[in-house]
Length: 245
Image (cartoon, rainbow, N blue to C red; front, side):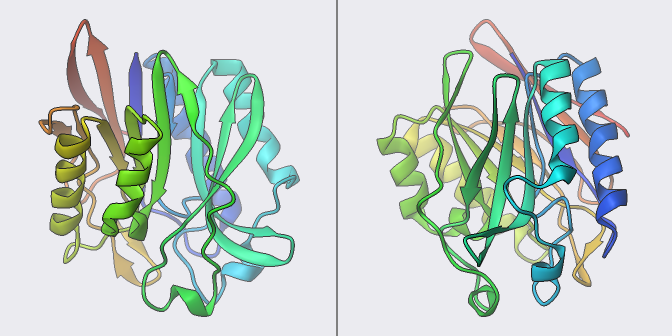
């Protein structure tokens, strides 16, 4: 099995350009035989607060159809981030597309300070995915700063924890430390995708990474450049390499 974390630099207030960038990353992941690709928090719009409502997506948004098509075409699970409006409330969420269903929706459960002015926390949308004998849970950014989130994932017998984040250079070291702790304590693999470049006039800290279920970091990207971190399981071990975009 091959997994991919997409480290991207988003366009501000240009969702169409972000979608096209996603498609390039998805095609490159498929060329490298990936079975799953994970993008950062609110990747389709870039991280936004004040403008998130205007940029938001609905569950049946026509702009998402291309991702369902790509998932079917490549037999690839695609996890993209967006502000999502559900029954009139705005959430920080992720859409999950696979070849046989979709989209499934995950909503961020623990908000960063200041996000509560614009977004609602949500626990009603928390799918547990299954693929290639893996049970997969999703986390978005501040979710990983609350140990209860990973503990609940472990109670659900999660074996692969997907962390879709936007951490700056000042915060990424703590994020890496938390994810290491979760992988080791809960014996689950962790795949993390972060931004590089600027979003919301903040710098992304990059360093998208993967840990095995013993807490060993098997690889990470640098802080400043776009690319894919490809993670491949060979027998009982994991190997990583970078694909430049």
